[in-house]
Amino acid sequence: MSRVVGIDHISIRVSDFEKSKAFYSGLFKFFGFDVLDEYTDAIGWTNGKTRYWIGQADDKGRKHKHHIGEVGLHHYAFQLRSRKDVDELESYLKQNGVRIVDPADEYYDDYYAVFFLDPDGLKLEGMKYGEKSGKPKKKEGR
Image 1 (spheres, rainbow, N blue to C red):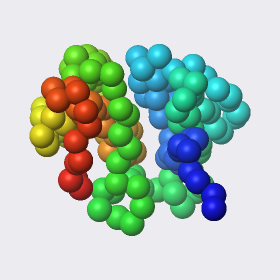
Image 2 (cartoon, rainbow, N blue to C red):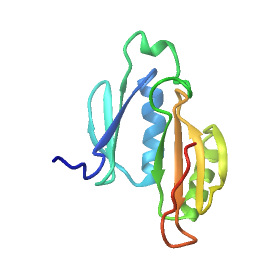
Image 3 (tube, helix red, strand yellow):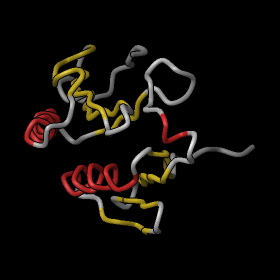
Image 4 (cartoon, rainbow, N blue to C red):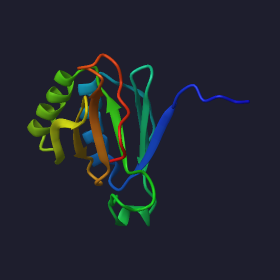
């Protein structure tokens, strides 16, 4: 039987490639990611473990931003090293005018996170769980 050993990458489509490229370039520089590869209408970043790609949406896709609640991706969470890293991410987001939808806080038992939007309204999250107890806790759906 085949076994999944991890998630290799995520690839999203964006309405304005240059605007999203600037947003994600700054975010991934903050996270310590490097450019993996770049094309005229797509770019990917990696930290050696996680890969994240963006690409230009087609004409129909460019006409609307992502809407949380539609079928499809609800949000993407970046697991951070510490609660301090979550707080530093929130500071970075504020300094760069990124829309924060849920500020840094403990949302579940020993689950600390900040939630924010990319230029198309895709919900992203920086989170840390298990720091207080030393082990991960089960989280409920959000």
